[in-house]
Image (cartoon, rainbow, N blue to C red; front, side):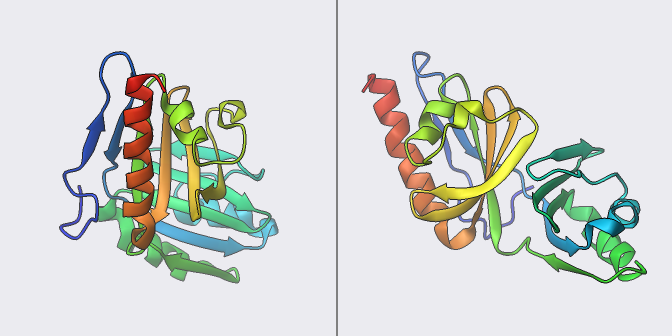
Length: 184
């Protein structure tokens, strides 16, 4: 489900068959930033309804929910939009000191898929995207915009970016998709 005010509503970039690249707005999800002492990880996982990853860059997915560890005490959590209030309530009842912030209003997702996905991302990311393992993620820069990059599958990446930078990131991806289609 895309929100009516989603900055990328209705946008899709599909390359020709030679480029094997599709870029599209991701379905909207509930998004949270969780900060908690790693010693309380089991309690946090119980509140979220699934175990949280225990290594930086690690990702766990189950039942439409996803948890990605970004730092020693920092996770990004996503879930279906309809589950947002239940997650907030579960963490409100958590007996551990923590910070859970709803960041769903500030970020949108962009899916970059196909055999040329890593090539497209490499144009504006200063590390070896191909070396990223499937099922991992990290905070990085795309050109000058901070993003969270998640490798969901061999040829499928998800970018989480602030709404205010979404058009900028989209524009670069659009330009790169044209270059890839032309074999530049």
